[in-house]
Amino acid sequence: MKVDIGKFESALEIAKRIFEGTRYQATNAEIKKLAENMICLEKGGLGKLNQRLIAGGRKIWDTFAELNFAIKLISHLKDNIPISYEPDEGFPQPIDFKIEFGNITFWIQSKRLALLEKENRQDKIIDQIKREAKKINVGKFFVIKFSENFTEADVAEFLKFLKNSAINSEGGVEYVFPDNKQRRAAVEFWPPKNKLAHLTHYGSTVDIAEITGAADNQIRGSLINAAGAFKWDISQTYINLIVMDADNHRDIHIGNAVFGTELDFCFQGRNGIFWNRENDGLFHECEFSKKVAGVIAMRRKVREPISDCYFLLYMNKAYERCLEAIQKLFPFDKVVNYKMSPAGSSNFKLP
Image (cartoon, rainbow, N blue to C red; front, side, top):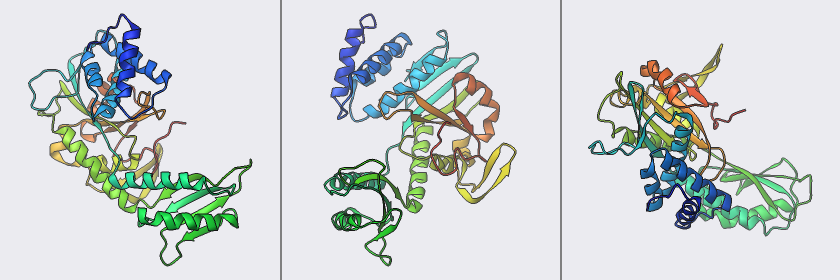
């Protein structure tokens, strides 16, 4: 099915059907935004990406991420700069984007990072606790600090503990579940400024010691798979990049995967804080490093499938000479090198 760019109503109907093929409940504004972006893709010569959207399937969220990236590319580059989506070049594994910019051809492979299975389970646990807490008629906020050993089997007893502790709790006091010797979680309660009808979840933290290592390894594996599409090394005329939807992972994990694991000490320089690292990052591995000039991490500005994004470029030191050309291709919110951490141990946030 081809999008009729002359009729917005046609694109609107197609966008509606695309969302209906997912479990996501899109608003009219989101449907309209998708239709407008599909028209933009068609005009920009990326009708093949529209066909992928229409086909839907299990990887529709990957395709939404590719759409967000493509729209940013189109809006930044001039009309006379050709952009191709999955060009038929006879490669064993198709490359997602090809951009011919002056005498340089940019090859960009897209990747979407899924939640770790463990983090996915934790999200489900938190959602269950939030729902059940609304049945507790105590008008307070609560914050949970989960230990790494908290599991689904603990939820029922934890909810009883939550109810009993909340009634006579003092603000800012830590209540440990089940006790200090077998600590699986801790809760703090706070009185609201305005009246609350029930116990209300305000936030949660999780012991990330083991999650960090698993996340780093997951990202490394995903990037290695993406780099496998490049059958040539970076040269004066070919620059290879990987772009990934990184909403599900913190920046520290991406930095660890590409630059090397952050050590516990850093030093202050004129341009900010610089981190010491192990030499276990992918940019230290010859086969990966000679094929990937940089990794682009994209994060949606709003929690909707179709969204403008923040973009960070993790630059391979071996190809810093390519940075000027890459920045002409694409506008980045921040460029990160091997000594820098985007924002310490947290997600990068613009001021």
